[in-house]
Amino acid sequence: MRAQVNGTSRDLAEGTSVAAVVTLVGAPEKGVAVALDGAVVPKALWGSTIVPDGGVVEVLTAVQGG
Image 1 (spheres, rainbow, N blue to C red):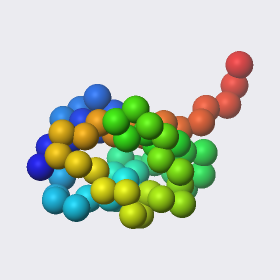
Image 2: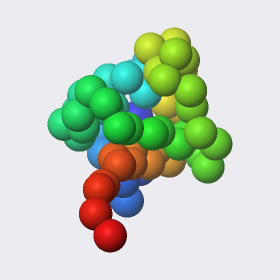
Image 3: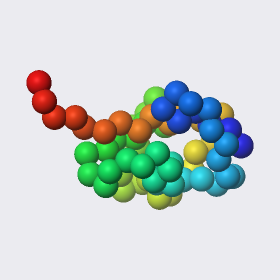
Image 4: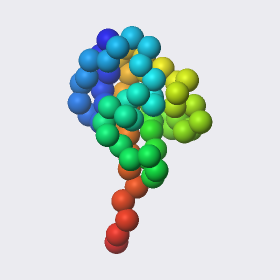
């Protein structure tokens, strides 16, 4: 299946979770937010939220500075 991850089309295995996508992009363990098809996914649900075929995932990391 294919999904958009941070603006890039990627092949993902059927049943890939949001948590697996976070690992795939190499995001840090803290300071990360994920949106799936425009809706924020609470961290407690990352492991059980499956990315659908054609889904759009945005993995965002907090940045300090000003």
